[in-house]
Length: 402
Image (tube, rainbow, N blue to C red; front, side, top):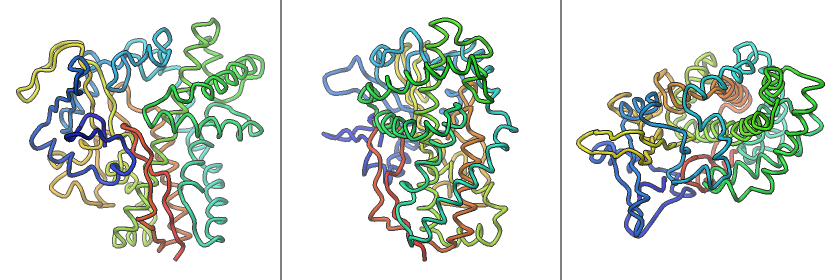
């Protein structure tokens, strides 16, 4: 669960609490849609939680009122604590600065770029699954769902094949610390990774490739110290944000399919439905359960006044299951639903730039898995969840080949 929804004498922070936070979300949506959290003894660190789809969507697109420039967690002084106050990453910028940088980065995330990497993704998934099936099953997260997005992020950043092992190790450490809400715990690893990319930036000046680092260097982003720091901030954001959604979405999807064999049978019988079903999995799993903004003015919502300068957590996980938007069966899996206005990747100017790549990875992985193992089973008792207050992703999902 999220740190904001404190229960008496308990402040949940992920782990086992992520197994099923849905009843708590429903109670907040129905009875306390603008939930104020006041940490014991620290009233100056209070924050608010939005859980209804309409409210979260409006806040996500209103960057003038709900700013990202003070960080994306409910911690005050976040950028200063992680040493990014002078050079915040793209995700912690508001328009127009965010818009200009995003325009440069988007050159590496065109539909053509996603199509071109799909054969490599499919070959990677197929090879991993062939070994998985030969072993009779195993941990599908460890064996496939965690290394897959790391491979794709490395591709987009232009990390050469001979450096992928080092990159994977850095990614594991940084994502673990970031999703737990303790990014500073991986300071040494982060420094090593950013040092590597500082060198890669120099290499791309001499030998550009078709990757986002090369595109940014070619556009002159890394021509001075501030530009290099901005580029390194982008790399950090790619590593931390580029892995969680795919791992969490797929790790949750296989659990949902194991729990609902009738829904799985529809996809096995007609694999063309998988593309649309990915949207439903993204809705129900919401790997990034919430991110915060900071109000730039007083806001009145549902009779509650949120003062200017306060942190507001946009609870995507609750909003994506709001029956006001998705109907009375919003908590149920329906692979034919084809939901729209998902908040899984955010909305508005901060809509995740890598969403198409994440969707492609999820689709390919499920197509290949269901083709090879149409009736797998999941040991629900063996599923474990990552700690941390913002990202809901399984660490282990034991999956057996039936």
